[in-house]
Image 1 (cartoon, helix red, strand yellow):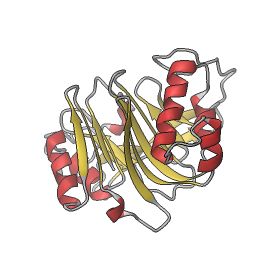
Image 2: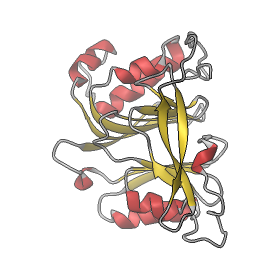
Image 3: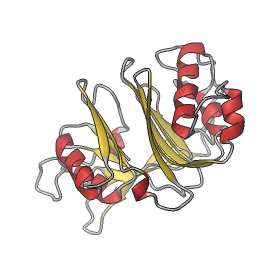
Image 4: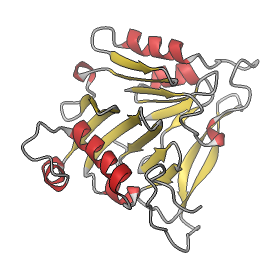
Length: 257
């Protein structure tokens, strides 16, 4: 999978942006979004398909021909201008299909996630971390709501599915399970996406395993001693006094810092 969003659509943590990575002396330099998309398509010449949007977004999938294993599928779906790219599997798909009223419909993991997102968006208040925590299995997904201009991504806590993110040369956030494409496109502004976490364009990066704790960024240093992005982990020593109800349709993942 590959997803690219301009700065106005997604606001990744500042620590992900490595100093000097964009056109500076240190190499490799980050690339433009269209170059990253081209690299992804070149890496999967017979299976890749993509969609680009006038607001500065692009999403792509390698198709099931590039599955990491027989148990991990790749799905690409759109419902009412909400797009989802998914890698992995949900072990409790059948029960979730019943929960979201999708019985009798041709529903896979991507369709289910779009329905869950729309339920959170339109019928809150629902804590997003609780909804994602209900997903049993190994998965990585990115949802793009083209009408609302919002981005939502998550990675299962088991770490079985690889996922990476970084910053392109002009500041767009890049999310991909293809390490070579992500690293080659983002240069030193590149890091693994933290397992058990979700990212929303308004709410930022949060753990859905420990939603009461804060995310803490740990700087990454390469073999040459240069800063390159950051590792993110939950600060288990920091606790919030409370988690407020989430009722805003425009920002349904927001929680107090």
